[in-house]
Image (cartoon, rainbow, N blue to C red; front, side, top):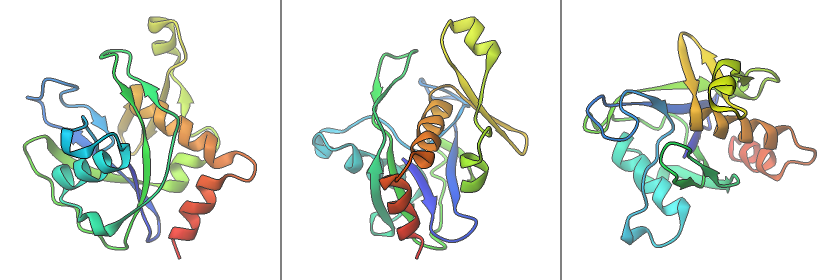
Length: 172
């Protein structure tokens, strides 16, 4: 879930995963996880449930405004469907401490500013394909999370972007 607060500066929520987890321990990412049977086949249902489990966000406090193209995670082979949602102003975040050891926000403007998400040349050379990174206040976001941010920023800047319009409408 690419969760954006409706109140300025429209922070995008990131989590820091616990070090003991089997998948992506200690990494910075977006809230989310595996689909449960109860979710059906709806990525938005999974994303909202995971946001509740990881950060205690009441499902009624989020408005799902869109999806991005599915992304394949190279290390696991899983396909992730990024969901974009807007959180009501002042929605509290409560870290569960089982899966998540921290949470922080990055202003939306810092993500969608052209050039903010840069190509990570060292990863490109190591992996042989495009890789991206976002650096903000001493935090380094890379891998699948950065690729999702790049897809979001590209969609944000597309001519007549329906996603951008839906997000901005949700801020009112």
